[in-house]
Length: 201
Image: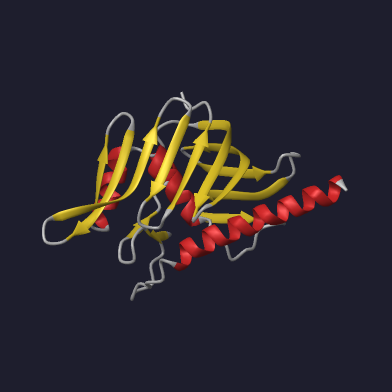
């Protein structure tokens, strides 16, 4: 009975993650006219953010994190181990029993993703993009976001990304709040939020 319980639990978690990331990637359906070798994601329907090289990280990470996602009234929780430095990034997501649910790697300009639970159709570059918005050098982020006509604002405890709205206006689309043990990402444009808990000091 316990085995069945955990199987159903993992199936629910997998379904939630599938829904979350497939809807997120599907909402960015605009395609570039010219083939681009760099890996990019659409932060808005027209603004394509290209992933930065790994050496843009502010400081190395080698730590456990607790991840919670909120999307359209649904909530998902899991554990992850994150290792990231100037050479690349590795993320392993695992369930309460310690069994791996997914593995994600970003090195040498390429993204590798594997999972026995989640589908290959899930687009991991969106996870990497949010990770970079949280942990990468603000100056590099500002330049990269300016390339795709977005505005970046950063202080000690928050980061904000704006899109153009009207002739001179700006609209807040992504807000990141950073405290010693918690980082919260709110994507106001796509309607999701998630929280990372760990020892970020």
